[in-house]
Image (cartoon, rainbow, N blue to C red; front, side):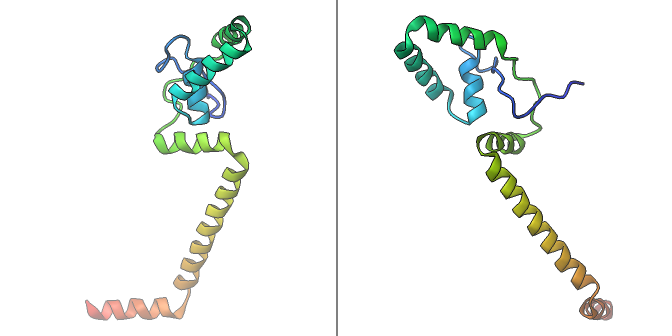
Length: 128
């Protein structure tokens, strides 16, 4: 089984009109495919048709197709898209989440080792 990078730019053959470059760029940056196609058309038109087309075709041949099953679900795909767009924010968000988990774990541990927990258990056993 080959492990594929989730932060790499792939061409998206499933949503392709021609070679899948615009669909891949749209997927990579979390944009709509239509907007990327319009921007690509404008870039090709204003840069001169031949240089723009050459760059597009080169990307079409150089980019690997997006592997099937790259993401397990939509949440994972959204996470990696956000990571590609703003890696510093993603790292800070992960640190915040881990701090929150650690705080809640510490609160649970403090409760489980407290006299109050033992008292609550004894009261619950008396109810039964």
